[in-house]
Structure formats: structure tokens, C-alpha cells
Length: 107
Image (cartoon, rainbow, N blue to C red; front, side):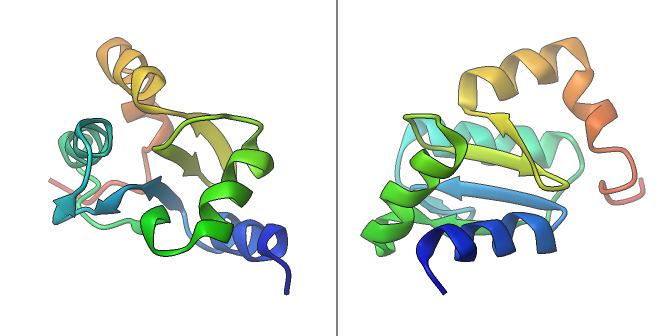
């Protein structure tokens, strides 16, 4: 499987995927940390994450896959949502919470 097929499989077989620097428990940059905090605030404590620092092919490939130059990158139900700034805007407007309905853990 080439890297584009791997990425496609990851984003289509997991309801929420975050490509990030580090892991949810140990983010390696402020933007990745913010992205994790936003997902947790949306009551999505568990999600599939990919540490792009561990695989240069994934790091480069995800930018091509999404046509988006920065990390982190969020996918929900196979759809590219955006990076940290877009996640912040969507969270503040309530749009992200709506998008995550049915994925978020029950209160």
C-alpha cells in the first residue's frame, strides 16, 4: 500500500482522525495541544491520532492528501475539516460540536 492509500484507509476507517505532532497525551507543539484540547472539550476523549514526527512519508503525504500545508489536520467521518485555527473557529461557533454529534461520548 502506498502512503496515500494508507492515509485514505486511516481517515475512512476511523470516525475522528487527528494528524498531529506527538500524541494526545504528549503533544509536541502548541497547535497539536490545542487541537487535542478542543476535541476533549467536544467530549471526544478517544480518537485515532497519527504522530507525523514518527513517519516522514505520512508527514509529507497527509499534506498532499488534504492539499493543506500545516499540521495538525482533523478529519471527521472521512472528511478533511482543517487545522488548529479552523478547529478553534468551528468550536467557538458551535459548528464543531454539531459535526461531532454521534461520535462524542455521552455525558
